[in-house]
Length: 164
Image (cartoon, rainbow, N blue to C red; front, top):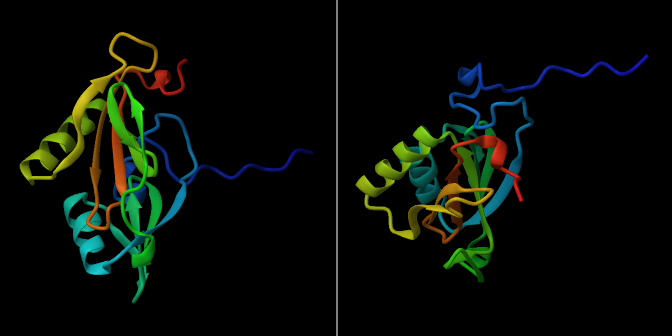
């Protein structure tokens, strides 16, 4: 008899499960990412207040955030912060070390507008890359206060996420 597979933790139809929508219309498992910051208070302000990520558990030197249904954890490690190398992608210098989320297009547009209104300095301004090609996507890059690069992207058709 095959093992019983438990139901998914999050699903697009139940965005209230984690106080935020998931971004994949299919069922998915949340990822976990730990990253360095130089100041927990600034991380709380950036991820909690600016990006709207609800806070989870925390201690003096780390804090969990719900990043669109995924668990990201800011750890105080000032010697490991800062922007590193960049690679050329579609005529832009993309930060090699970055993380982010794929949002539905309307949410991406709303976030881009909100970040612009808040005066966020973009590493790469919001734009559509690979226009007319497989994998066409809206993207933007910006840094948190510790120099961690984030990419927020969207596809008009999520099925193009892994298109070649």
